[in-house]
Image (cartoon, rainbow, N blue to C red; front, side, top):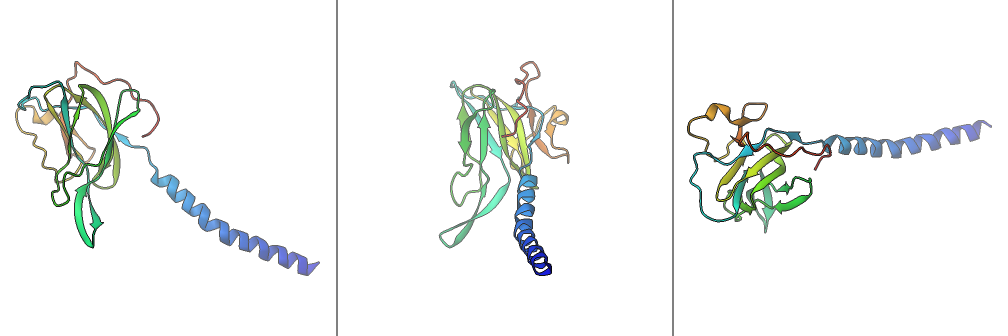
Length: 185
């Protein structure tokens, strides 16, 4: 009877040895799949020069990462998603203009309300409601050293992250964004 008990104890120990790392990895994966932090709505620069045309423009300065390519390394802004009012993905943006130019991609969109989900510096996943107006550029700055320009009167009312970083111009309060669904990206 003692031999069978020892064998069962060893079998349980082997199973625990095999299962424990898997359980820990699963727990870590769940922790990494965090819900994005939702920020205040961002709109176009009220002092920017409008262009003619039916489309609006979006430029998002997401965090910059280093990528390998052909035995070299280059830096580029991380990709982000654009979601419509119904929370369905409208566009996936690679956010990489050219391999050796660290500038975000400017995307044209029909006027309206959207949400972008992307990475800010510090590995923070954020959701930002954005207002796109015809002929206007909406800039969202999610990186610490973003080149987006926010100058002019009213700069004390800019949308900011919790740590004080400027994200963008506030969207027109008269045109409020649609309610966001509770689900993540």
